[in-house]
Figure 1 (cartoon, rainbow, N blue to C red):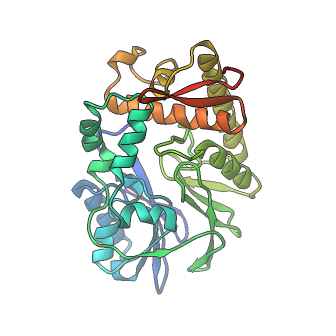
Figure 2: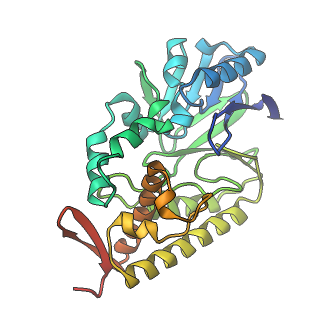
Figure 3: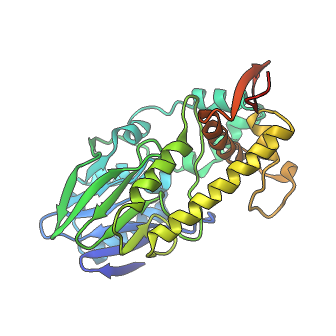
Length: 325
């Protein structure tokens, strides 16, 4: 489905079958010489059909299309190789482009998951079945670097590129200062809270995300165009709500660690989750994996502030209050 946001900005809703997110918002900035597409959809035929139909309705020649990808997750980048094969130019931040242009380092991800308590006998099956892996971009593609401070013009609009890490290492937002439009990817979403998780060692994604929110809060924004769900205004109100969500999450994690130190999987099992069942044992393994990643992001945030620390105990990494020895 195509919706005119405001001339020359259009939204194409690309379906995400069997996913609670329902659809991806792909945005088109129509231009006379070249047009711009922000994000693509999963690497699925149904997604390609919806996106391609939308581009055809707008009479856009893919060979004269620039594709700006906010981040590497498959629902935003999955169709990049198909568009590239038809002549589109592809632009992403280098940290996220590496995930697409190089083989995925599953060994490091799985080793980190095992270190943090996930059961190894089913982990490979969970990875293979996960939509983000199953429908990831596949095929040759040349990606041009896009980063902080870059500016791109289409039909009188100037997009300012903002590096906003947290949801991924190289997440980009695009800001149009004259119209005060913010193409926010998954950094700001209405109705749902962006997922902030840690998948590999040595990162502190929640700290990065909080700094990104600081940065977006300072902008003058009339309309937020997010990667999912509805468009909205009053971005500062939404930032306050997201911050409060993480404040409550951090307090919950503190209580759990102070009550009983453990590895990430243990701590995630004690947290509250918005799922159909409250019984951790009935969670699908993929959901347990995501929950553990979110728990680890909050644990690393607390560690960076000296409130907790981690030690090695056998095959696992154990989180304890910093006062414990």
